[in-house]
Length: 137
Image (cartoon, rainbow, N blue to C red):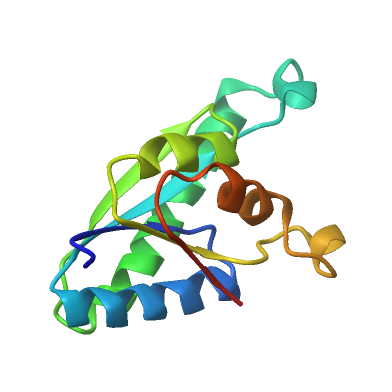
């Protein structure tokens, strides 16, 4: 049923739980998993951010991808990783998901203001994703 799974990660505890769920599904269906992290700075701040600071966001993303990959590596499961820059996370996830059978995402990320709701990225993704979406909380 699922041969290619896209797993969105942001380093939050919910995204790590999403990784555990994606691993179980991937093992069951012998599916390939790709991790994705989006390094994004909202347009409001782009003029105020240095290239060095943007690179620090990218380096943080690489660490988050590595930390998430360890969930799979501990289970002898190989994953691919993608780091996308400069695209709004929800748009990047939906555009990338067109090449996958399932998108797995945590319901709430690192934004504390959204803790009481579904989360802006996951809420948008369930509307625009071209494949089934598994929300994990």
